[in-house]
Image 1 (tube, rainbow, N blue to C red):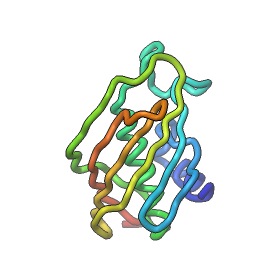
Image 2 (cartoon, helix red, strand yellow):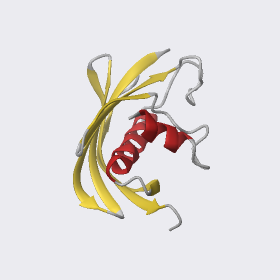
Image 3 (cartoon, helix red, strand yellow):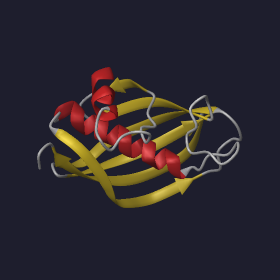
Length: 138
């Protein structure tokens, strides 16, 4: 699990945009990760506030990690489509988010995921997102 995030952090496009701090579970179809907002590293907050849209980016990054878990040659992905988005205001100050993504359909180069972000044991963001991927050298 650590190797996947290390390889993502090492890509030319990643810094400073990697939001996933730690993957705590990954299998063929699901992944769960932790990320901290408002900690020592500024996570693009505005004062003491973070945008719930950053949770969608966390879902996309975890989706890419899940793709790379089964296809390490995939280098990068973009979000060409978002659907069924529901967001709630985030707490002020520092907080930890639990991000979960489920691979619902698709294969290279276009994948579909369902994502959920939990903050303080409550759903803070839900979305269906597509990831359009590119393999190294492609």
